[in-house]
Image (cartoon, rainbow, N blue to C red; front, side, top):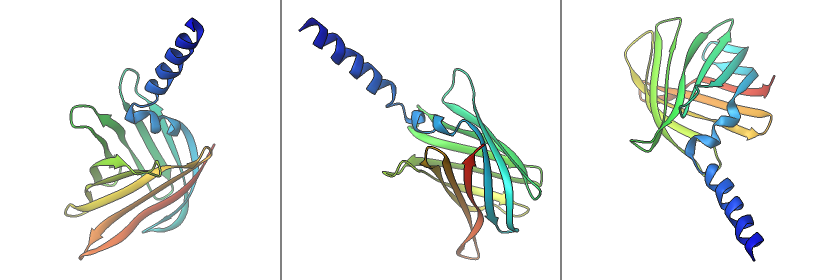
Length: 156
């Protein structure tokens, strides 16, 4: 009986450790090679995610021949939501808040500005399996959602 109680405590401990919202996004840590369709056309990019020690935040950077940007993805315990902020080398920036979908993908909505006035922005990102990442972002222009970037990535 004593062993059963200890085993149950270990199981509950481990399950509890994985219930933190950011635990779903930690699997993004590493480097990714991406085939990208963007508003500029098809291309290849590299995305890297790393943990910021002592926080529920990941730093990320994306580099391609058409784009160079970085930002942060995390979970804010105070507001109970995920957040993403980014800036690029071309006067672009975005900020968004989001939640996890039942599929495990992160759905973010906010505002972005890429060389003009800020407009509504949305992004869906996450793992489709252990080795594949999907990151799709769109921006509203003239009342219609327009593709910014759709990346299918493989862990490098």
